[in-house]
Length: 369
Image 1 (tube, helix red, strand yellow):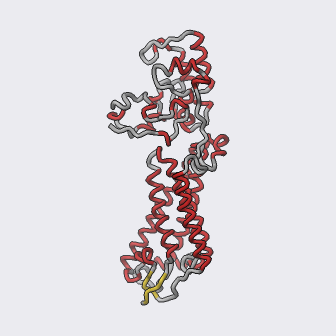
Image 2: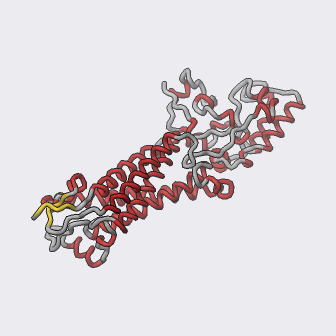
């Protein structure tokens, strides 16, 4: 056996950037406040997939799709002779070929579905123009995105498992270490890069890195730009601000359903244990404003899901709604009772933009004890 150059540098760089990108995208999906970062990373991974597709068409030997063995008979033969193979595969074996193609397709679909979910649910990114027409279907797009992400983890497990099995059964081939130094112990022809392949790699990989840096460093760039408008309540309804905001957080009208606001305004003499009675004229002004801008009138994710979760439309305690409980279940009682928060009702302790009516994920402030 001779030392054969199989995976060229661009192929190896793509592989490790792909790995890092997927892991980073997964980590950034764990916190709502990291959603913009998640979108930026996902976009860069999408560019990497586009590059890999071009690389599969125009790249060097062993990296081209034409060198993938996608024959069903070859796959069956390969799996049946794992312990005593009749043939060695320099590039991707049949099983790896299927998994690699499936991973690229799945990541592409996860990227596109993520862009749709981001635009439709969050009113952000390049597909935000779809928000106003499709916001009622936001959960469908989110579920589709989640499906492809879960499928990707299955494929990753299959890929890693296959590499480990190959390492165990055919250590002498150096399949595992070849993705680090590019070499396998095989008989055959080494891969060689042409000048146009080098240019393609520079633009493809460099473009993905440049896009990530741009998306993370330039505020309000098209990839993560948000289009939910902040509300100047003091100009629109100063009575609402003066009477309600003087005692507690100025809760946006879009946080409760019409029935809830109607019930709350109909019993101000017993406003969560306090007498908040108002001059009849002021009371009527605030009531009309709240009802005209209740959650049903908003396309924002928080409003839509708040109403959707309500068991009774006349609920008046925001912190008792199923949606609020679901989104805050991971926060400990100690945090709510801390000096920085003091109460579940103190939304602005964490949501710095709540009194501007947006409540963006990116505006969440992490509170510690």
